[in-house]
Amino acid sequence: MSILAGIDIGGTKCAVSLGVMGDRADERIEIIAKRRFATLSGAEANIARLLSELEELLAEAGQANAGHGQLEAIGISCGGPLNSKAGLILSPPNLPDWSRVDIVTPFRERFAVPVGLQNDANACALAEWKWGAGQGSRNMIFLTFGTGMGAGLILNGRLYSGTSDMAGEVGHMRLSPTGPVGYGKAGSFEGYCSGGGIAELGRMEAARLFKEGRTPSFCAEPGAIPAITAEAIGEAAQRGEADAVDIFQTVACQLGLGLAILVDILNPEVIVIGSIYGRQLPLLERVMQEELQREALSHSLSVCRILPAGLKEQVGDYAGLSVALNQLITAD
Image (cartoon, rainbow, N blue to C red):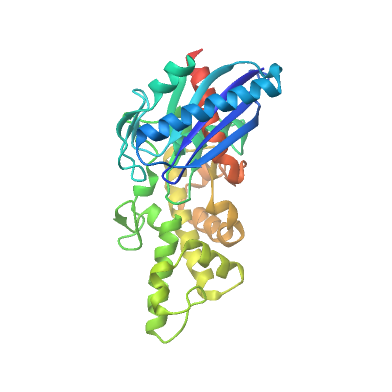
């Protein structure tokens, strides 16, 4: 048995997890320990805390069960942009003060094992491919569909990250000339299919309804429009409120358009969609499938499955571990 460590770095929280892998042949893994803490101010403080937390978890794992084995690799998941080959984090939007931070070297020097770095979409793609809904496939796309919209690409049985780690930035695709803004672009895939985009659609709809003298189901008064969230709209839609359901039908339609582009270009076996898609599947699936049938090449679509994330809300917990496993595989 061997131990893998996963590091997740985010704008609001960081996490460290340990996974035990019994047999490299089937690559199954069990998470045995995890710690989280609120992201601190400055890269150095966070790196020091992550190193300390990992050391403590390894010590506790060794005391609890000597049969767990030794640490074999560490994987780090973080929002981009980054340089995975050089191990550098390059000022992600949620970590603006992390400018050219070497995140890999401190872990490699402290623990003397292989260390890998990937952006969070790629890391989640690896996790779903190894342990989630994409198991057994050779061509898989993972879509985050959370705060933003990004993709991780598994092509011909390998992670594809592009020339400068920018492959999979599907949220930047423009789906319509106008619309909610996401990734700095009106009418983009992220503008329609993300938590921020859904909230903006809700604000636009609320302003229209108040102007007509009506009160939207997800906003009590005009002064509350800036505070509208995707969660509030989703709750109203689940109650069957027509105005909120209409917003999710718009989202579902645009999701189908975006998926059709990916199906036509990449011809995947499976597209796995995380976060909001899994939570709101009854609101999104039918309209999305109808639009996808209209827009995608039928021969390509016939071999592609669209699935919610198999790891569900735990996909982030497995993300760093999947990067660690990928580091071992590619080093062999």
